[in-house]
Image (cartoon, rainbow, N blue to C red; front, top):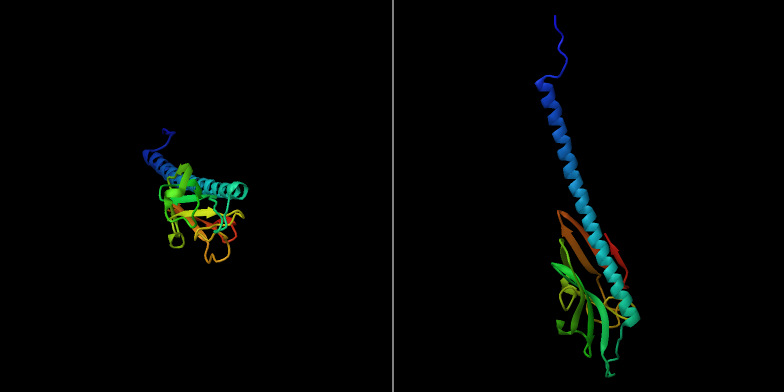
Length: 175
């Protein structure tokens, strides 16, 4: 009687099938993990740029009394569906009537969809900061007084989303 050492074809097929299933699960979980990392990186970049705009307005910004003959010089962020920009508003009029006095300093594109709660902004997606670092999305130059709701930016894609909130006092946080 002869003893065969080795594996049968069925045993090999079962092992290969289990291996393929495990690799597929790892690939799906890995791609979701990578997409979550990309989303977090984008949100971190946006928050950093918001903080930069606040600092620029605090350090370099100029606000005017309506009776004085001077010009406003404030910084902010302008969000669109394809990206976001660091902007500078420089004009003798307040509030901005349109985007002609808003100059884009730095542009950033994003693979994620970016949306804002536009019902509170006169110019869609624009938030400027006053000398105190408070948001002026409804263009009250004093900021923080009659701002009834926060400015919310939603970053979404790959079936993931995150919200960035700029509250009435200028605090920025992600959820």
